[in-house]
Image (tube, rainbow, N blue to C red; front, side, top):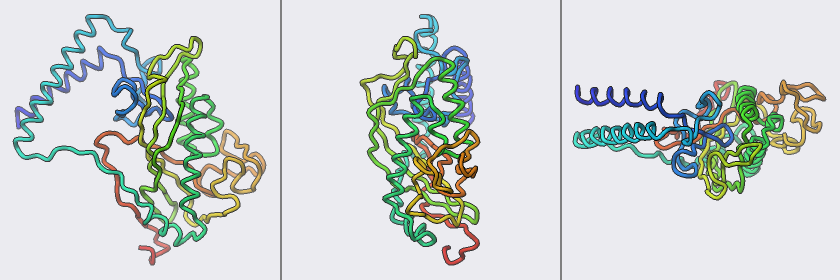
Length: 317
């Protein structure tokens, strides 16, 4: 055990040295989840959730800024890390410890739809998933256009402000995150939670697209590649106030109309409809996107499916 702690200490010191001598990874796509420095196209994911991995210029440096000496140091450190991790892994396996594995993200649509329809008979799973796909495309294109206003009708206040700040960083640095040939390969309901205040519905999305960053003025590709597909997985969580019912005429149509008064959507910076002044991005009138998670290797996924904590509906438990 003492040797194990010794190895871990050495790795910690080496990781600190790596941080000091090497730049942070550049990450991108909506919410900055894609990591171009690994996998050659976004097949690997940033472990930090993608929201705060910026360096002083907002994106992380590129390899072209390193000297030959720095590259040698990084290669030596990398070799040492591989050696130490391999040695620890061998010792762990000899002791019979189970190997880590990637958790399967199960489709719970068959359980979730009846749970929602029990209190909201007009809810349609097919229409909701179709709307989620529309939201996904709209947000990705708004991100590429660096136009946070287009995101406003869909996102809860905290998430919107986070994306707005990230987009502003792209503008300041004169960079554009280009997202093209977007294709949603899979989309299904993964988790549903209801308590006395809110409902939360999480949708799993498996997506393929080209994803790269270019310089705004020169058009030079700085990260990623226009010809290489990125394969990404997301968990999009939507919320609404418990007790809000689906209105077939207006629900999941916030792209065109205010869910409260029905007027053409024109959302102010405060999330209000400019006609009726209702705050429409709180989940009080309809579903709103409250959180986005990028699925990463060995991510632990809550696979509970349906969780009902609504004290007002004891027969639902």
